[in-house]
Length: 565
Image (cartoon, rainbow, N blue to C red; front, side, top):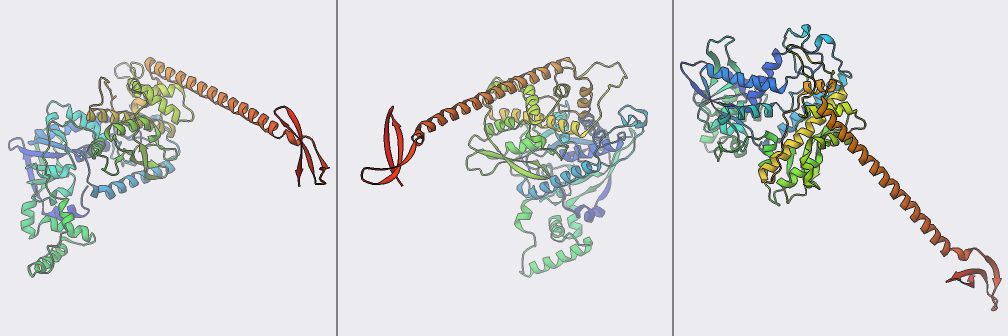
């Protein structure tokens, strides 16, 4: 994630280098940094739009662009040996991760407040002439939540890059530092590892040719040579920057480190770097297993958490979804699917903490690790997702439900179009944004369940098929025309929901009638027990004691009882 200020201080000490096919250079690539870099390039070159949802780069477009970027690297002599993706983040990254989630929510809330309507004029719709010109524009919202997974799945299946793509058992940085080749990344942390990597090239410093010249240039950090020239390990420089982020120049930092070194030689104090800080920048103790299946990074992190009963708290960081922040979280959808996944992974656990948006803040929510009541529910998971969204939404049209089914791969998702013809589509509204976020939540819950079943060999004979990552443009097109099969599935779900509602209403009415009847029986019993109060009159007993004479009925016989006041 980078040490703030480290790149700025050290960048003048990097050196310009040229890369070409005539002198190949092996590289190991930071997978997430690659994806976000290519997304930024693709976004900047994309057509302008009237809102942040129209300008989001489709997942398929991004995945194709990632492969094209790698191909261009190879053409310039940068031979891709490894592409590493995070499999889990260390606990020390939790504050940074929390800060990023808070910032994402702040951006979403601010955008929602500033854009009450998301109307898309005709001139901004995909394919319109006015949208043909491209321009650099700013991302007003965070990148779509599944760009890393979309690229990862395409790379893992690629004929060339598939064998070189890995999800590592931890953060990718240490494994990149240990790769023994030039590292291509966006993270300045790679400069600090001990022993250091051969070299580090930042994506921002790489210049690829616009034409097929086959020559690329970039500024490369050579950590060992830099440390020798500066007179101090880069680890010590990094810690001094962390300790005092306001240090105005590298010269001042080096002067401070010189004084620390002088005192250390005199036996006063140590080298100034705490062991906890240094431990974050050591090489991994285990190698990368090339036979491990690539997994979506957040799910991979869950799979790496201990499964023993005494393992403590389990956490699942759910992806940040672009949704309507003025409504309940989209993650209320398909909670039971995720709970089933947790029960497979952690059979001894009572619950798992899910971290996602709750109202106006990011918070944790405990989810009981409870298996599904019937395994048969796994046979129809897309209808299950539709039912969950239907239950979570106060009102939803049948056509919208059909569009959800089409987005999840049911049927063709709309009519066929002639070559060059642009399909009609609905425009984004906040209602559509939130419904699509619920679709994404349902899809991700299904993905999580599949990975849990594969990780625990609990799948049995159930072939759990997960559709492609939901695409927003396809959803809008399906809202216009979802297709016959999607309509049929939606109609069945609506009919089943109606039947379930009628059964629930009948059960409620029967329960209410039973309660009324019970109250009637109880009232009759009370009436029998209090019948003695019907006839009362003041009277003196033969002994002269004054009281109230009450007629009591016991087992059909009447008795007169004198109650003394």
